[in-house]
Amino acid sequence: MNANMSDAGAPGNAADELKEVVGKAEELLESLGSSETVDKLRQRVTNTVASARSRIVALEGDAKKAASQAANVTDEYVHSNPWTAVALGAVVGAVAAALLTRRI
Image (tube, rainbow, N blue to C red; front, side, top):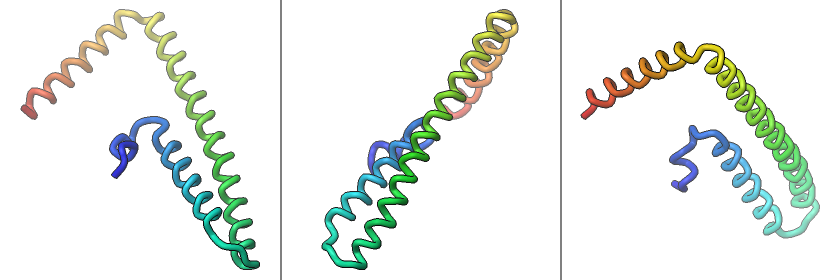
C-alpha cells in the first residue's frame, strides 16, 4: 500500500489517487504495440482519460470552493457569536478528552 492510501479520507488524496491511476493508464497505452485494434482501444482510453482529467479538475475546484465557503460561514458565525463558539469548542474538547481517556 502506498502512503496516499493510508490517508484516503483526507481531502485531495482521492483526486491524487485518481491522477495516479490515469497516469498509469497513459503509460500502459504508450507501452502497447501498434495495430488497428490497439489504436482503436488507445483512442477510446485516451478519450476516457481526458474526460476523467477534466472531471477531476472540476471536482477539485468545487471542493476548494465549498471549503472556502464553509470557512467563511464559520468565520462569520464565530465573529457574530464569540461566546457560543467558545462554549461549543469547550464541549467538543471535553467530549474528545473523555473519548480519548476511555481508550487508554
